[in-house]
Structure formats: C-alpha cells, structure tokens
Length: 315
Image (tube, rainbow, N blue to C red; front, side):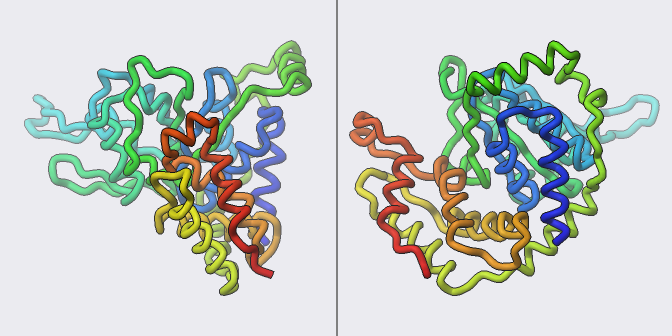
C-alpha cells in the first residue's frame, strides 16, 4: 500500500533528526495522514518544534510558525485588509494561517479571542475576513504546543477548542541513553536550526498525501469494531471518575485514525489493537476528571486504562 511506503519513508528520514521521539512523531504523522490537528504538550526543549518542522520538510509543505503571546490579535493570525495609497484601494495582507503546516507555539499564552481565530480554519479549512470566505491550501495541518507546568500568563484552552484537535500528544523528557545520543549528534555538528544540512530525502508531496488519504477511505471496518469504539465512548460517560466523557466526535476521530494506522501497517482492515493504540491520544484532552479523582492521583490516561479494562474486546 502507498500509505505504508510513505509512512515508513517519513519515519525513517525523521530518524536522522529526531532521537527517541518515535511514538509522539508517529502520532503526529497519523494525524497528518488522517487530516486532523495535533496538540503537543511538553516542557520546553523536548523537540516539539523540531517535530513539526521535520514533518513539514519531509512532505514538502509550506511551513509557518506563530509565537502566541498575550497581546497577539486575531488579525495577526488571519491577516487584515490594508488601504494602499498608490492603488487607491484596499488589499488583503494574508496572515500566517495561510500555509499548509502551521505551528501554533504556546497556544495557551494567547487570550480566547485569538485562540478562537483558529477555530474556523481548523474545522472548515477556510477563514472569513471582512465578510469574504477564503479557502486554505490542502493539506492544512495545525500543530499547537503548550507547556503543562506553566500557568502564569496563560489562558487554558476551552473544551470546545480542545475538541477540535484530533490528538493530544504528550512529549516527555528523553531517557538518559537518548539524551547522550542527542549530545553526540550535536557534537558532530547537527543543528536543529538548519534542517537543510541533515540530508533529509523529501520525496513525499502534498499530492502524495491526498492519494494516501484516498487509500484510507477504502479500508474496511467490521461491525464489531464500530461497537467497540461506541462501547468505549459509552463507558467513558458512565465512569464515576469523570465529569465529562468522550463525545461522538471522539468516536469519529478514533475510527478515522484507526483506519489510518491500519493502512500504515499495510492492512486494508481495522483490528481492535489499532483502536486500543489510539484511545489515549484521542481521549486525554476530551475527558474531564472529577476533582476528588485528581486528588487521588488519577490522570486522563489512567482513566482510559480503566475504561478499556471494562469494555469487552471484539473477537
């Protein structure tokens, strides 16, 4: 299958730049091939930006980065109309949202009004400026980052915006062996600011991604898988540790990404393990824990483990 070849090539080439971030990068790649968006959560210096830049380079997509700050305005993201004296007319100055891979760095540092400027773009693949609807290029892929330990001067994303992200991917510190390998590469001259020197073989194009997505659409899903995905959602809504369980959009996201992951492994059908592999990144930003459960040390991921333990796996 083409999608399997493309995924293997991208993951292999990314290994020239990224060390020890195979799972997070795989999830980001699944989201891109599915046509969704990703929220990366991790402390500074864990290669979140490098992940997005590497993927954009490997698929030969336009890449832009927005540093979200408390004074960032919606027009700084979308663009604005400007009167040009020499022409005697208004012209549109497009903002950085007009790209294919957009890195929204520290998205929770901007106020809600600016965060909301991305909602239409993420969901509808278009923006509206001065009443005019402007389509965005395909693929349009948002990689947003946030720091989980810094709260001063931040504006937590509301549930409605979190739900627009296909995945929430946790990026942790590298183990010691991985960190030593990173140091070795930097000692030999690697510089994350100059990816063009990493000799990445960028043979995938946005058109190739569209063909991969067409393959995903043809992947078969048995009735038992539909019920399994639905049962997970239903159980999340009944779990006493949660105030809010998974929405129907969560179930749809789980189905779509399971089909993509099956294709990346060379199969034209989905198995239960495909679903189980993706439940945590799909659900962890969509469920809300009860305060008493948080006090007891429960996390969204451990809540998902409880949900999966209660749901019967189809045979």
